[in-house]
Length: 409
Image 1 (cartoon, rainbow, N blue to C red):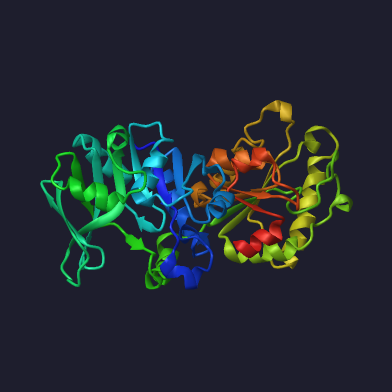
Image 2 (image 1 turned 180 degrees about the vertical axis):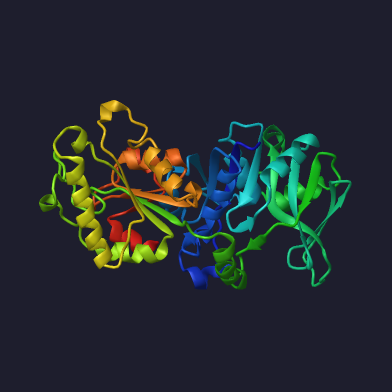
């Protein structure tokens, strides 16, 4: 299976400029998320462990958002300082790869194919370059691709014709060694200067798919994506929250031992009310070793949470479950974060919980490792402090507080 992927994320978005302003096209928001995140999701879901983002225009925006990891997959960057076109961008990115074969995706196109099927096809045909083709009713906008016995034999330019056929779906399986041996300029068009001259070559193959396909390069398709993605790719449904430092003020060097020591953080209660409308289930998961140390009793902790829930319900919010680990850190309990025992308890109580559609919000690195271990998305609460270097590689998003996250979610 593909362990590495290159995603082309250097598009200017010229035809969308009046819609997006200065936002790079791969970062165009669709259903509250950058379009590029959907390509990253498809890659990670398929088992890709290392992704090279080939960036250009506004590369700093992309890097600031996705940083060095995404859902456990490593992200590295190949930045073109001068335009390299599609071919030059792919080849420069390939210099950072380690695998013999890799997959290439376009960051402004979503073609929801089975990567495993493409990989098996590519390797079984001993191909140098395999193209995922898309069957369409009208090839005029894209130009048609002709195959004979799964070998690509011809390309037809864009026309006014409305004939059905296969088009280039923008996903490629490539032999890295073969690509690096090609005698091509530094900047070149992958489609025109490499693929078209290869037509008829035994190592140039195509496999047709009928899966969902959209290219947001024109405004009408960008707006179509907003409507269609809401059904195709629903938002996260399950929210896991840390307690101290997220809901209430964290007491440095001590614990909230009784209700008199509890202090809600600003705007948390209205944020919880907003999140209650957004998420199907909301859970509190918290390490509370103050009980294990004998500084408070289990009854004290239960009373704190009873009073906490009363305030939350009064404000219009809810928690569907509260899960705590009261054992000492030295116990190595499987329920103590960053272990995922508390998440597993929530899933036992609520079998509909899917960690792949879950978010963990916390202010501690153990919360982020908890999310990573459970394959959830990770949100780090900064409390207006700089983001630590160690946190940047294991978080998906950062917000100053829960209120800011509730506005985003």
